[in-house]
Length: 385
Image (cartoon, rainbow, N blue to C red):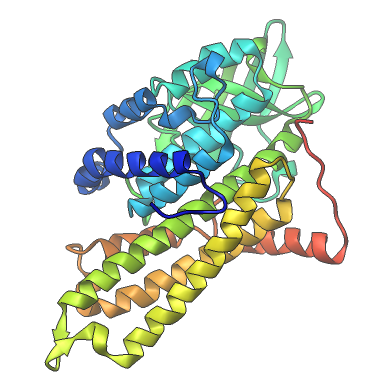
């Protein structure tokens, strides 16, 4: 077992358990899920039973109460499955929706939503993006008007992962006191869902949600009214770091399957892993991956120790997304014409990864955050302190 300055023996044993689980319960079904456009809920319940969906959820609410490095390992291994759609379903549930419930949810909300979420019985989504409010979250138009014991919600959300087959949505709305977060049941009267047809990550369901006079109990207000924007800014760092973790895991997977193909494919009387041009390209990619992996693991550790690593999360999300696209592009080239065939997973991965510089804040937004911190000495305050 490899020794690490960041991960303990228990962490690495957990990694091995995850790898065994994904090998048995995920990899044989990826093509089936991609064709169906959804992940079978059975595997989500199995993950809940194993404790994989609630790693950071306190034990009193059905979770493992584990440290953040276990989550970092989970996201890396999700990337290594090579199935971006499956990884998106899990990350959207555990590190978007559930993250808000863990940090800002009342005991009522935790018992109602967090406990069954950790068990895989309910699947959550996060509703921030709107047709006219993507990166500009202050421009959110969806409204929630207080009427007695309810908020009445009107508006729409788009590009919502888990929004079509999921059970609830942690939703950003505009209330009398500003932007707030409500937990909305997706089978409530007045909620309609439209499944979106995507280029890649096809087994991850993505939806447009419409809210027409939806009555949401006041008890479903997450945290304090008017603090929703700050909750989103805080949680986006975890989302971006989770994406970087999956990016690194997927890059390692792509390199592995490419090396395997190169060792088997012959041309001009020798296997193609003996051609200098291809060998040097592999050397460059392996070096870049290793460098960003080291930065990633350091940032994981700092976050686990309680540091507020906004700049580092933004850097990692920006650069690992770009590098992932570069690695997949170059590796597909090494497969030649076979890389463009559905028979080989590299083609599916090629479609999937294009979304990574868009997910969780575009690369342009990441650069602006980094520039503000480096040039303007901008400081970002914690929302949950």
